[in-house]
Structure formats: C-alpha cells, structure tokens
Length: 193
Image (tube, helix red, strand yellow):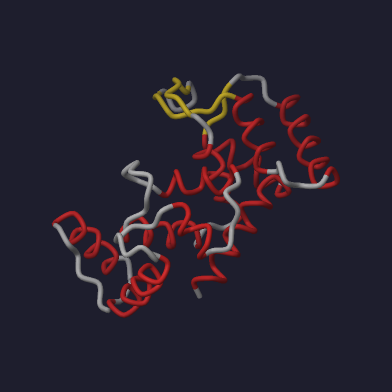
C-alpha cells in the first residue's frame, strides 16, 4: 500500500523526507512496516504494539525512548513520528548517542556564560539517576563501570548542570554508559531491515 499524506502537515513532512534523499519506494517500505506493527489499524502505534513488534519489555529506557519519539505528546506514534524516529535513532553514531541520553533527562533553560545565551541543561543528579536507570536491568558487573564513570564525572564537574555537548562527550568517553541504548538501536535496526 503506497503512503499518502493525509493533511498539509504530513505533506510537508513527506516533501522533507524526499528532499533528505528518501525515495517514494523507501517511504512506502517503511509504511508497510508501520502498517504491520499497527495491529489495531488505528493508524498509530501504541506502546503495546511497539513492545510486541520489536520484542522489547516496557522498561524505563524503552518508555523514555518512546516518549522522545512521540513529537506531539499524544502517547502514540503516527507514521510521521515513526519514520523520523527510524531515521534519527538508527543513524546515531556513538558520539551522538549521548545526546539521546540528554533528551531522556529533564532539562531546563540555563544561562551559559561561554556562549552568552540560554541553553537547555540537565541537573547533574538527574543525569546520574537517568544513567543508573538505563542500567537497571544490568548485572552488578555491568553496573560497576557505570557507577565508576559517574563517580569520576562528579569529581570532574565543578557545576550543578550539564549542557548537551558535555553529556555527549561524557557518554562518548564512557561508552559503557550507553550500552543499553546501543542494544535498543541495534534491535530496532534488525527488526526494520
């Protein structure tokens, strides 16, 4: 079934996808996957449909992941959100994966003196709690490197909040922190491709 945008907003996103190098065929292929996952034919993916289709448990990391992908905050993913999430998440490299961790944290606007402007930042305690939550199902051996990296980071940071680029760099330098996200990305990729 070929994909047809149902309103002006979706038409705009469709044209954006084409300008980004997606072909009509690749969009139709992703739409076929979307329809297969959408078992209740609601033209949206509920978290339950996601868990079943991608064989994931409703862990904190997956729920936070879906919340980030849900651009309109409706609690479900429409096709536009699905296709952009496919592209955005599946193309993340290890350096940018930390940015996804940043999005999983509660951020607030903070004045950044180095850029002399307001930027979103995360409270260090919230960031550390988010990292530990990502590893909630890890064994004690898996949590050890995470706790060590956080302890090292806390000694290094002389501030109460971190900006996105700082979170990205820290996660890149301590890749054990993002292992659950890498596994989720790879599982998602394997199911789609």
